[in-house]
Image 1 (cartoon, helix red, strand yellow):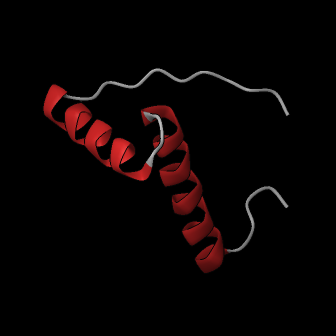
Image 2: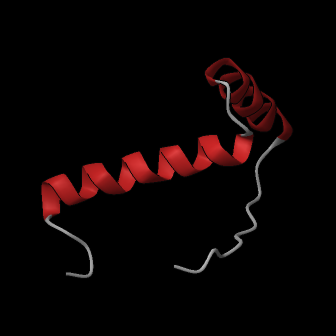
Amino acid sequence: MAIKSVSIRIDEEMLNKLHVVADYEGRSANSQILILIRDCVSAYEKEHGKIGQ
């Protein structure tokens, strides 16, 4: 599986809060975002079925 990059726009206050949460969890901001995306997709698939299957 290829790794792709995505650029997002996020206000400074939210970014700072993301860093606090990520630091608390012992993760980078990037890793924290990936976990949030994974959890969101998992919740969607639980309700609607697997995506792309």
